Length: 226
View 1 (cartoon, rainbow, N blue to C red):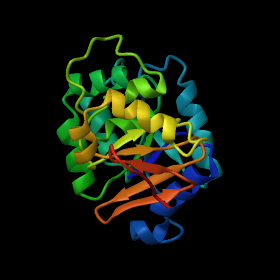
View 2 (view 1 turned 180 degrees about the vertical axis):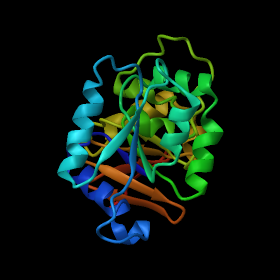
View 3 (view 1 turned 45 degrees about the vertical axis):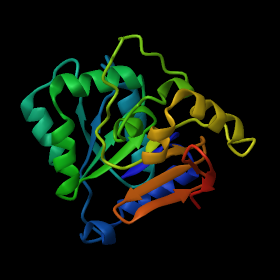
């Protein structure tokens, strides 16, 4: 899994290239990787999708399947998405994205996808959805305008994730805000990854690998992931 704040950053591109290399995917260098895109909300003109598609093209990768959970959603479309080797979970409104995933009952689908070797690449809100909870979303400016009471995410890794983190002071101010918003027990069980605009993280069963200068906050201490 890749978790990032900005797809354009060098750290994000290095992380994506690392997890989608032919050697990691056990495929020949000339075989293309199938990539899907899950929108965080309805995109009338698919502008975010097309922009993301262009970014992957610069990395030599073809993003070829778009799925919208709000309009035009079909089981056939979902099946095609889940047959992709990797899925890009788009950024956007975290609460809206979670609500749509809950509505479609897709939590188990993505856990199964990951278990059979699929790769999830989460951008901002998309990355937050992969974690046990999106309770930290207000720290990056999101508002629970839907009044969601169940903030549980997919729980695919034992960490929370905060994109767009201002780490100019070493993460001190943000860690104080996080400690005020989130329960101490939550941070102890699921430490918070603080990811700046120029950072990215790869999460595997072996642990976390940071690109750039992401930090980890467990409610007490700040630790570097690099």
